[in-house]
Image 1: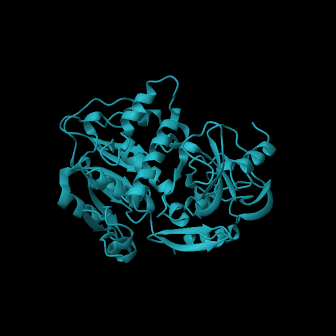
Image 2 (image 1 turned 90 degrees about the vertical axis):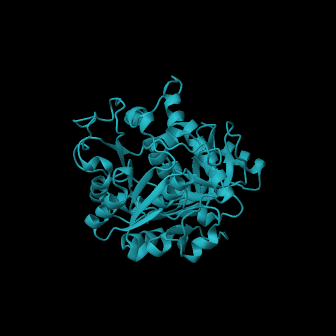
Image 3 (image 1 turned 30 degrees about the vertical axis):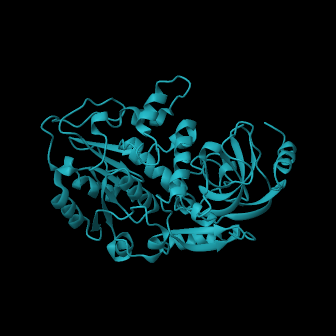
Length: 432
């Protein structure tokens, strides 16, 4: 590891972005406590040639940032620095970085919650270069801070779990092909706990493609916002299940903020269904799509995932070609006819084994930060999508100012005040 003084000298030499020795951070000292502001905390040092130091300009608040301390999970150590996504400026880059330069406006995506240097709740954040995305001029820091985690979750769910090929969309990746080719290389081992999902989660003959239907339950979430756009860009047809009293007008395409944002991106679903009565929603899906609905993506939790499962083709009865439940993800599945139905649960899956003809999937989020080739493929593609305007960030519905305002922002999220968009914290003194 290079000495901290060397980093500061290097940063000063490379640009006008001088890096101080200390900074302000938010620390969580114990579960069920608010975050505490500390003003004299060391600026993190780079430990690898592909790491960057980013000066934080705006932070996107995520539900995990209040749920983790409230329910005491996802806290690998205390005191803890939370925060999963931010936008800012590259202040320093390692010797192995070539794609990004000091001064670049970027969004940094931290799915690696165990490394406190990468937590967004601080003035200077370490990020892998392959988890960092240049912002085009038309995308503000605030908007950039809303995109990252939702995009990663959505694209991995579609591209790996469901096998969607994005090569026809701005030269995007075929993630399933990429991951399985990497698995054959001894130099790029896949994390053990997601290896089976990546290699045998879905058969080549089952992959979702143009014309296929996907139902997205919880379509008001930011991950769903990304998933709808990506699925439509890849040629899939989308049934969105959402509380239409709160979000129907926006998803139907009649919100001025969205109309002003883009003219090239299709983010409206093909079928909009009210989730207020889950049984009715299932009936509508089955009546309209029947056996055509083989793919589901749930963003809410186990209960709604169970409802979505009832709408998939596998719920209509045992497959004639397969009279027993498919083997678990750890075992490769033989190709069957008719194809299997696939349910991805972002925050939970139904209890028990899937029904005959059905498969459950969990999003292999580790691919983004533990497999550089995957992380870089997604980051480079996201740059293209944002630059072309084909992917629209979520609407920013509130901006707080200063790290000390994070607790108030998270309280608003706890109270259910933030719906249909994202809440962002702008660091004090920054004009974005």
